[in-house]
Image (cartoon, rainbow, N blue to C red):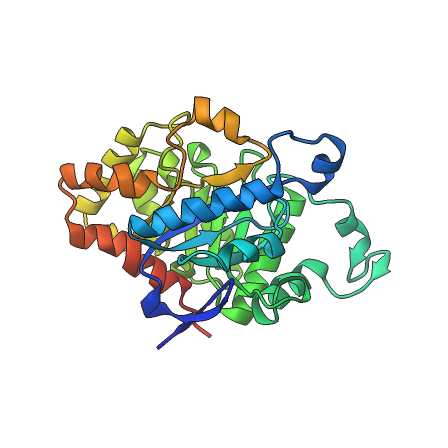
Length: 323
Ligand SMILES: [Zn+2]
């Protein structure tokens, strides 16, 4: 038996079931909410929307959702814990930092050898979030999340990635990345983390499903990592038909043990608010995989065993700790 941390405490990994491994409950920006309020943001309403959505996902067979909302995306585990208490789906929290480029200037002044000479604040936070609980509370993080985008490995992004590699070494928690598939930078992420002692098998290269470059995707998997085919419903980037075709082709080539399926959706996002999503990205919702993508994979000849491998076995393996 292996235990996996959720918002409501540890659960046996046998009980994770079908898992959406890269989602967001609420993506927020507390500073902008104060100074440039979004009329669509109503925390009470947002909680009700998430509770109803997750209850519906349970009816559709989803048992676990990983909330990859880390600081930089307005993580508020207190608010999400209030959702977790009311739904039958396991919710898993994450730590890390979301920035494609620079960190808040706080990090220029705090840390070893800096003006306020102290222990490294990012490493301290990541490890504390995983071992002790986020913000002094009871919710422990079950995943690490880092980002590189078009800007590549900027100084601050490299710092976040190095801190995540150290936290991984200490705790064994898997690292999920946000990659920029168009520039094939998952390979750069993989190399960076491997150099810092992270096993390729403990890395999920997120947003790989935005690419249809089979050479690139196979290289990531041949190197040992799992790829996140994790933006189903994001048809303003790439259609689900094309995303499904790539997954089916790779599954046919024997790669189903190294792919995970998800949406990168949110019940509320300050960046892409619900009214915009409803008109411009209507399928970018957490029910698109159970409602639409699984039948499409089935039609494309992917067996239910391979679908289970991607939805159940792979997430379980990645969420189980190694330490
Ligand atoms: Zn995401």
